[in-house]
Length: 418
Image: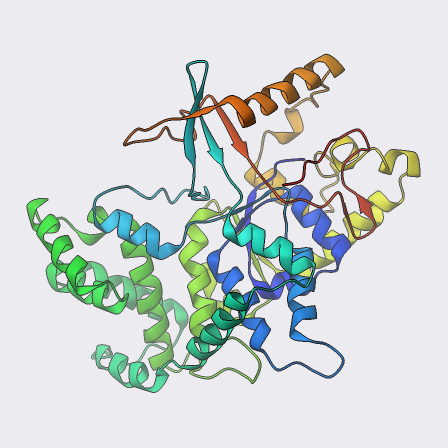
């Protein structure tokens, strides 16, 4: 399929799409699926829904629309925090998704990485068929309880003690105050408070403080940039809530604001973030890098519908050749929002020539894929190669040949099961 900018969506954005629009989302973006999306969808199994629909139908419909061809699940932010705070890894925050589960392998002395299907991908594939494990139903109950069991009043009153200079009147003032509280106060006290705020276990907090002192007591933003980023997100949220700029309650049936804010934990790992949520529209711009875009869900939906109309006008014999043949990149017309996003985040795409593989080369590549699958041997090494260092990467995916009205792959493309 085409590549496209790395995009993160929340549940509200995907809910608004029909299957055809979801096809074009998957086709023109590399989607980074957050653990929060999985959790929110799972929680819908326990949601009270209107007459005529079951929770299983709602979850199944969402799973059907979830991108599968160009989608990868991001590592959980808790895992990333632990890796950074322990000093085991640095966390890049430049728009790349963070994948986990890679197995280093070698084939004829050439090192590569294999990414097996994740538990989340397997779950979404089952949910499309309305198949749910009892364990998932129990987890859904736990998540519904967790989403409704947050003591906002306690944090509301606690956070107001930070307003010695007066209550902030705008979210911009809140953001500046949060940054100042983290960067301009005693860094040892700030590091301890931040770890407590984010729920870092006591035993790990002690180890982190030892490492911080041994490192020369650097500024938090230098010692643990990703931790400092999440710290700023939570500090911003609680201060904004205490300033009555973000509500402590949400309408019935809506996720609480803390869950919505938590999507920002994954903002560093994309180029484009899209949501139909009003809170995201108000808050996300304060945390965007200069090279990122926020797109309102309704605006993206409208453009995806325009793309569907555009490609539906092609002759049937063209459409049956598969999306990669006639829609490897978006239309060159900048009237399309997707085209403008490609121009901004992939500025060289218009200069790239379409690569047409000969039948012999296609066969050779497929033979190599099969050999890697069957013959590559696992490698035991403390530090596996990075994606940039690997000579080849193989990812297994559950994909549907057809979604909505679109035949996504040409008839001669073999899709393996299992």
